[in-house]
Length: 147
Image (cartoon, rainbow, N blue to C red; front, side):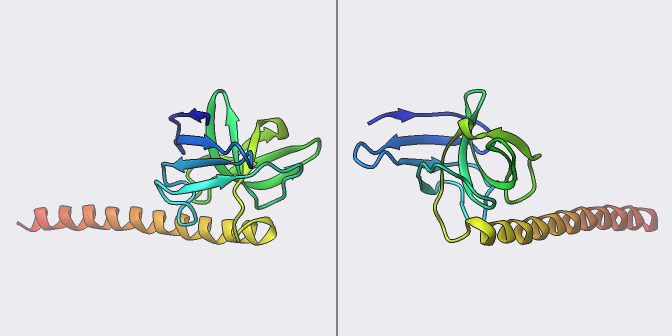
């Protein structure tokens, strides 16, 4: 069994290759793909000949491995990938960068719709968090002036 470790933003911590099926099982770390894939989940990565909009793919760039969703299919077997939470910037990759995909219910067009909804929820939540922090800061300043 082959084992490899990498440490990156979506931090694929360890992977083992199945001798029989040639599938890769990885233990994830990071929260970029939550709530679908949580920190510490073990997922099975399967090789395909063609990847579609909305597929969650494991890919490698500069020796680092990432697990992100295809958000745009380009000509010549190129893809744009991004995490579901909208934290990272979209990245253009080629078919050769892709190790395989994570088969789940949220692949294809349903996966793309899931990505849009989840990314919107996380963006709104981040804006509310910033607003609440500013409101807290402002009210604490006002209380200090009153005292």
